[in-house]
Image 1: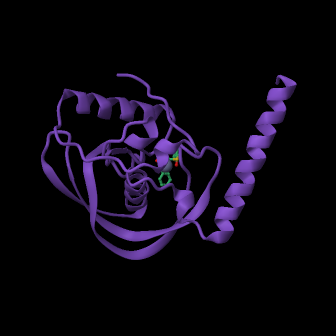
Image 2 (image 1 turned 135 degrees about the vertical axis):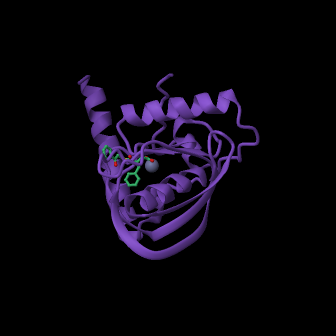
Length: 176
Ligand code: K1U
Ligand code: ZN
């Protein structure tokens, strides 16, 4: 297995639409293993292929809660086929490090996808799993959680990000 580089905002790959996987072969299964290793190392509870620079419709999720015992979920070509209710949850993103914000999402989702073994599966989820599925599927469609914020939240994000970049520039100039 190998650790992959996580691309961060504003890398253009994060704005791209990932393409459906047409053949689930050893290359795809290795990419899933590498994505899982990268997610656990980060650490995170999910990862989409766009985030490691691969425009393929693959996501991995592990909520890493012993009481849930869900384990690793790897989905290929996932599509939300049903969504109900609304909820708000404070999200983070490995591609937008250090920024957290409350995002409005569906409360429950039903997702259809292929498993790494090529079987069609249907997953019904609520709670954090439903949030993580929506967050990761958004990545495959070129959206970040900051794209789902209202005008005030987006403005706050842009200001914080600009300040962070300016601070980074200053410490680079100082050599620290
Ligand atoms: O897709 C990603 O960038 C991963 C992201 C997933 C996510 C987090 C919160 C709500 C929805 C989706 C993360 O995993 S950010 C890190 C994080 O939330 C976390 C890390 C370690 C332990 C617990 C949570
Ligand atoms: Zn993310």
